[in-house]
Amino acid sequence: MEKSPYLHLLYQMLLIRRFEEKCAEMYAKTNIRGFLHLYIGEEAVAVGVTQALAGDDYVLATYREHGHALARGMDAGAIMAEMYGKQEGCSRGRGGSMHLFDGKKLYGGNAIVAGHLSMAVGMALAAKKQKQNRIACCFFGEGAAAEGEFHEAMNLAALWQVPVLFVCENNYYAMGTALRFSHAVQELEKKGPAYGIETAVADGMDVLAVERAAREAVEKVRARGKPYFLVCNTYRFRAHSMFDAELYRNKSEVEEWKKRDPIPRLSDFLLIKKVITEQDVQDLENRVAAEVQKAVDFAEGGTWEPVEQLTKFVYSSD
Image 1 (cartoon, rainbow, N blue to C red):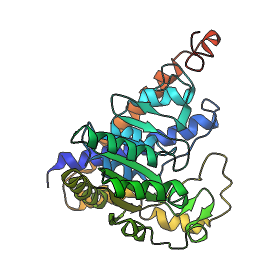
Image 2 (spheres, rainbow, N blue to C red; image 1 turned 30 degrees about the vertical axis):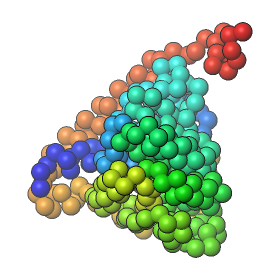
Image 3 (spheres, rainbow, N blue to C red; image 1 turned 90 degrees about the horizontal axis):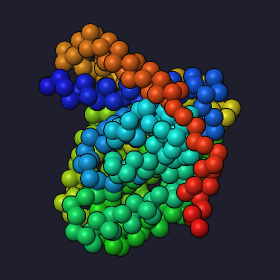
């Protein structure tokens, strides 16, 4: 087992975790306002899937998107500055946590539940028509899978045979509604075959399992030009958002899921296999801490957009 690929996976998950912990801290200090949805606990999905994607593939994510953006390679400073509302942010401070965007990385977040599924189908259709060897990867939660847009997107993707990878991050709670209360069929993987779409399930708390499943999925989508549905069963350790009182689940349930935390799960596995050392883990922690602090410093040193530009990008110059 070669060390560097595994260290990279561990590094990306640690960066997401520590970045979001810092976001929560800055939110408590009122440096970050508005909505903030943390991805803590689900890092293995974004990190595992993005390993299988090419740089010119499209990536669309949900509003719980910091992890996807970081895994895609977006600059942590630009993301933090966006949440601070500074014009150095990736969306000039106008979008905040739920509207991260990077044109060069072909990455975009989406704040409307299920609204981006049809966009992913459109991107895949464009790639097909232009005869480009690229795919569209769309991340969404099980809450979106209960929306009409999900079924419309699945139907058109199958009907038009376009290269799109649908990745459902099933964390079992759409805001505060448990899966059993929103889906008549709780095995989400049964929805894909209904549209003739090949489907697979992965343990979303195991980054290696997610990566294996994603590589197989991407290979098939790219080779066949057909849609694929990948369900990753995962769990968020934090509340739905910073405003969530979290009255819909027991703390004991959360603690049970934390025993499957994807970060120590990978590091412990690698330590047992003697692929990495305790010093490697500490070095990664130090590196990540420095990067997160650099992002905070960048955001705090950023500038506010002048009031005179309030209507810029809203109304035409005329």
